[in-house]
Image (cartoon, rainbow, N blue to C red; front, side, top):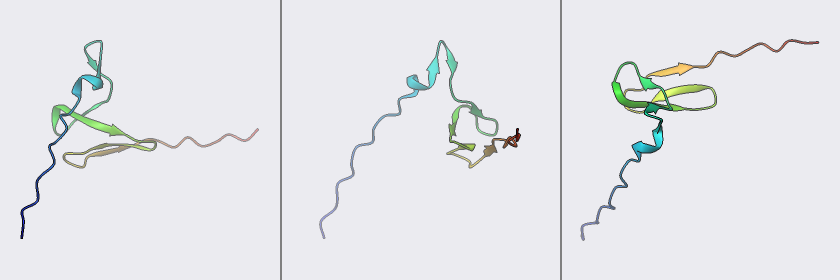
Length: 63
C-alpha cells in the first residue's frame, strides 16, 4: 500500500482575535492566557479542555 501524504496545516491567525491589544473573545479560566473560548449563539466553549459557559435565557415579557 502506498503511504498517503499529510496536508500541510494552516497556521492559526491569532492576530485576528485581538483588537487594540486586548482579546476580543474571552479566555478559558482553566487553561489560562492564550486559549480562547469559542463564542456560539447560546454558549462559550473551550476547544482544548471542553469548559463551557451557557448564556442565560431571558424570559419574554408579554405586553
